[in-house]
Image 1 (cartoon, rainbow, N blue to C red):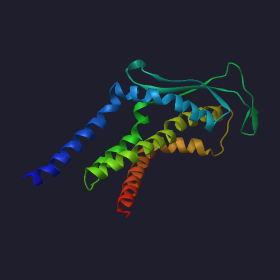
Image 2 (cartoon, one colour; image 1 turned 60 degrees about the vertical axis):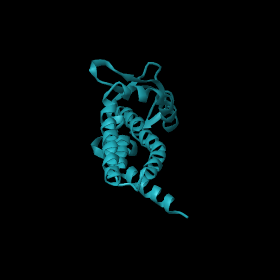
Image 3 (tube, rainbow, N blue to C red; image 1 turned 180 degrees about the vertical axis):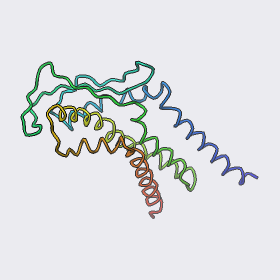
Image 4 (cartoon, one colour; image 1 turned 90 degrees about the vertical axis):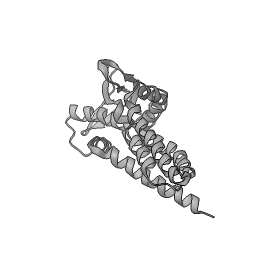
Length: 201
């Protein structure tokens, strides 16, 4: 009986964890978990695009929904549509994304890792250990770059730039469903990596 109950208990516990993950981003815990990550996001944005100074990066909880809001100012000249755009002391550009979208790719990854058949709790623990840096990488490649892409798109539209921009294209891909694909690929990579590591002599 104990052997028969063990898979059922394991499945039930994994289901409860999955439900908790689904509910978490929509609760006050969602913004609370994101708040400590904002300084790292600011540093990442500054490194990716030094032409912009980060004036503010905050979680806006107004109007009953949480959004991640970025405000930047141009501090170095940039070339747009063949023209040199100079910084202006009062110049500001703003972009925002719903906070729930920021968690989408890591959430898809975590749910798939829980649902993917595992050879015991030890394998699940290995997956969880690898999922932490993988989730951080997903966050870094998602929300900060989407915000930056929106700022650049505003600048491009203001100056009539119709050329291809990899950053803007990346932001559009993520908004069009790429977050789900990124989470799926990350989960599959983690499962394969963990199994290879555990099979090594």
